[in-house]
Length: 170
Image (tube, rainbow, N blue to C red; front, side, top):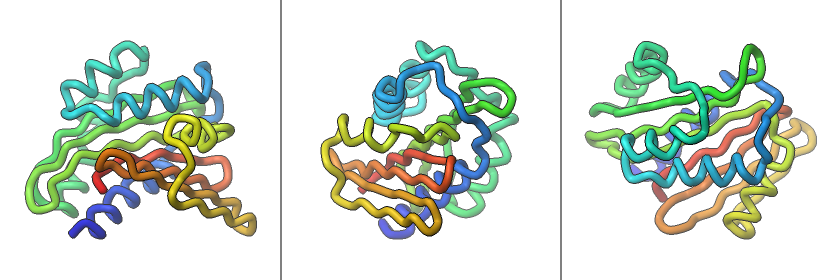
C-alpha cells in the first residue's frame, strides 16, 4: 500500500511538472523552499491556506481544482480536500498544491512545480541536509533526490527546465 501511495504522489507531482509553464521567480530560491516546506508541513488544508495567505499567491478556484480532484478520487478512491495556488503571470507560473485524501489510501501530500529550477535542489539540501538518494542523468537532463524526515518523504525531481518538490508520507 505504501508503494502505491508513493507512486500516486510521484505521479501527481510528475504530472504537475508538465503542467507548469513558468521561468522566473521574484523570491529567492531559499525563501521559496522555506515557504513551500512550511506549507507542505501543515497538518490540514485550513492550516495550509493560513500559511499560504502571506505569500500573495493567487488561490485557484474550486472549479480550477475540480477536474484534478475528480481524476484523483477516481484513481485513489475515497475523497480528497485539495487547495492550489499559482504564482506569476502568463507563461511564468509556479504552482503549489496541498491535499488530504481519505479512504483506503488516505494520506496528506503537497506538490510544488516550477520552470525555474536553478538552485532549488541545493536550497532543499541546505534546509534538509544531504539526501538519502540522489541521481543524475545527463543524457536526459534529469536529477532527482529524496530525504526522509519526521515521517515525511521530501522528493525533488527535475527534467530539463521543469522541476518539482513533492512531500508526502513515508
